[in-house]
Image 1 (cartoon, rainbow, N blue to C red):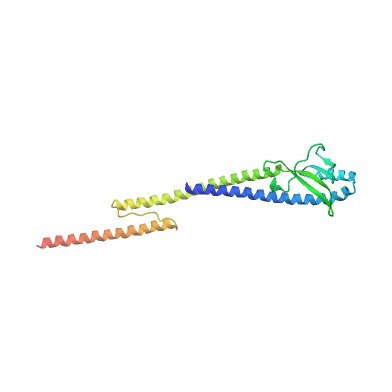
Image 2: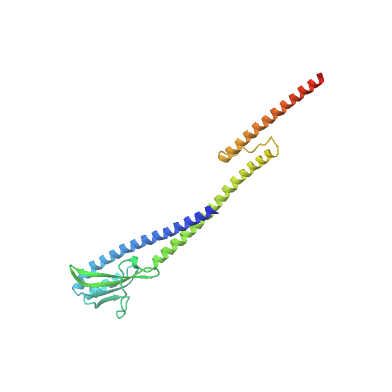
Length: 239
């Protein structure tokens, strides 16, 4: 029972650590994706925005929102006027942007970010965007259930293996105990199965050697006693 408890505790720690490592890996990957997305915004939107090429900006924003996982894009100029927007109502207030994914609440389904567009040292505008984060929870939940399933399978297999080993050990020990009880009851010819090459088998073979030596000594004592009685009877007859 104690071994099963320790194993269960270790499995729980392993599952918790696996989920934490996955969350860290996913966060690091999404932060890299965020940095790449911000570089793309600066590379593709800064010059057209500085040149006030609104038709081109609208096309670019429409193309960007088609990327997998992008929920909305809103482009604003230096005066905070909305120049182009996709999947977002211009009259609707924009959410507060986050710096990176580590600040994202665990139950959030969308990451709201912002890219400041700069042309040299001059700020020409900003891009507000949303990234779908439902896959983060799905991946975390999937790993959690997989880890729990693997943990329970490992626990059941370990319990089964320990039960088999325990039965094998106690069976040989019970055989050894019966041999000891037989010697205590006065039997001298007691032999146990040879057993395997492990410690229990060595102990059973040692028991057989001891039993054989004891049997030989008892037989020697019986013969000595018989000779003694024969000599005593002969001496009595002579007298």
